[in-house]
Length: 96
Image (cartoon, rainbow, N blue to C red; front, side):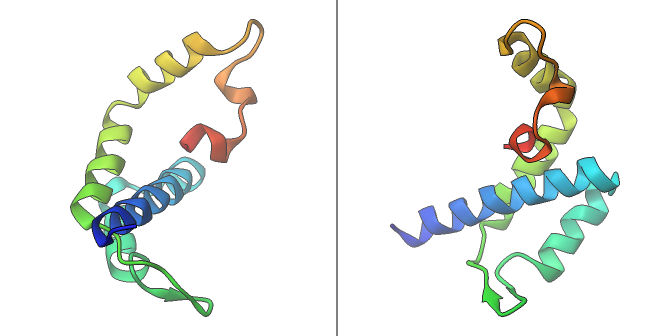
């Protein structure tokens, strides 16, 4: 795996974590981005060293998803089995 693909993978994982935090805690996006920039991306947390993440890609993912959430939810909802709603989906899976 190249350094670029590793940093993009790390950015995707961090984006899922940030989006989960945004959904659960309603953390405003600017505060969320700053927290991840300052304390998570590429940092050591609880004795685990996180890979450096491509910051601009991470920002694009988080900002893009939060700004188009209604559209994305509609697309996902249209693919759910009859009788299922977004509310029935696991919160982590929904962010993925």
